[in-house]
Length: 238
Image (cartoon, rainbow, N blue to C red):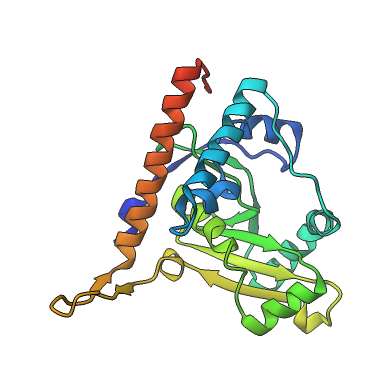
């Protein structure tokens, strides 16, 4: 059911993450880092407005505003290759390097997962957190809730069947360094029951496909508004 909602991708290139070329390709495009502000049902409307303003600024100034890196962000970037190698060793699966891709559905939609399997039927998102956070992951056996929107974006825009979340911390004993959990869109958008407030009405079950359709609706509304602003401001992105 859900696969009908997935677009196909046309690859722009498989460029090195955080390279000058990578940053240039991201200018003005909506990627997984913006997913929470768009597809999270609990996102505030001003979050989308703020995001749109940032994207407009990127196109207008031809300058990608990189987020200042914290110690753990730098640690994660440096440790990520070890995490992906550990994933390959544990699963026996050879990973393809992640790259920047633009959706055939709309030229402003893009994605840049850490890695993929085969033709990116599976995407991998690796995190290398602090020892405390990795301990929380081992106990909860789950990613932070805010990461789920990033995983959903990877699957929705790439068409991947699932996203493997990896948490890796080299400070732990070898058997505890690696945690892998597979997420599907059904995990992130599960069936829910909307309780009726009226005694004479039944509760309403909202299935996963409806939630996913609503998420695509939010993306479509965001794109329409964003494109209208670009046209009004005389800005273009090829």
